[in-house]
Image 1 (cartoon, rainbow, N blue to C red):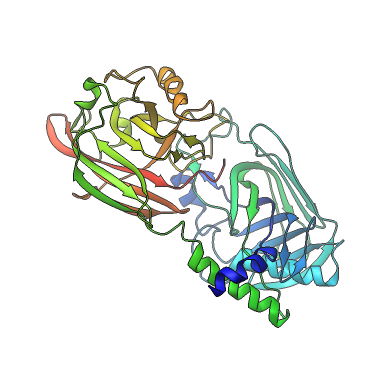
Image 2 (image 1 turned 45 degrees about the horizontal axis):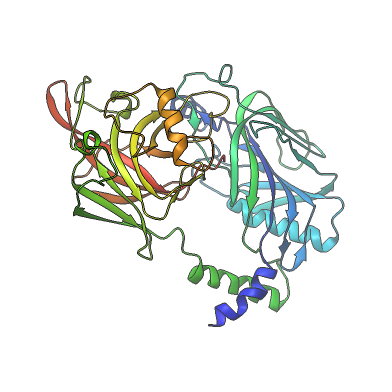
Length: 441
């Protein structure tokens, strides 16, 4: 009851929102082989830039101000750090003394151990501009000795091995951003005992941020109390990331499916519910699959693209991986491979998805042309884009279905489907995202 009474006051002291740009001296959109080559050799420096649209820290409003952290870490950024990093914080020259203190507190809260040791705080004109381009990857940052310029990734020119994806997540908390190309990234100032000039590296993020309240060091008792109380409210009210559950039961495939499609599916239905028991969806997997590949290390791509791998019912609708609203109903799940072009590079950690096909329109069990599937799947959402559900790899599937946590607040439904591969009996594991969305949308 106390938490509910405090809620209006706490929301008035709520967190900070705005635009975010990051550049580091290692690739974030890359393949594992290239990332391994960076490990321990490079990638220890970064610029983290925030442009505040609205918000307060410890009761001090910081609307319209910019702040930058120039970071020198001990290890390659994105990996576990052996020791805290050092940082120079550049605060907006327009900030008052109280706002400067609030901006430093904000940076330390959002950057964590990377900014634990602030070696200097310097006022400067801070420019953080995110361009409204089609790919959402163009930005400029200028402040004192810092310069960052980014552009959208280009599928035709920015690939090296062809296995790239967004390997790392942004360094700051509360960020939703898309990987980008840093055409210029430099720090030429003093204070860190090192400078750098980096260019044309797939090492940037461009997007937005939203944070919880941050208490200013040395703030009033009431300010500190409100920040602590807000955390308590969040711990009791905000539970969206709590673990979903799965229940397996004998349930025939939905009658909405065509008989030819329904006949492919197992009657062992897997119903996933959120932490409050509300049903997210029920999945019917394939009874069995057959592939030409050998039985060793099967992958999704060993199946033919657009193969039906199951069906799903969403009783109250669903929000897909692109944050699109999916209408309540029954859908086929067909394998889709994300194209590696400028509209899709860096939007997901893997390229394999299940596309949602409305049951009343997807009546034939055979594979189809991918363009036909894309057109069919647009009928599942309220936008003119296919409804998509991301697939994580599941190389060692367990016998029983289960829900598992994955990075970036994803939850997946793990299950296995019997497969005949090269005449041998085996199984292919699936990890279907049931909670979680792209950070780039």
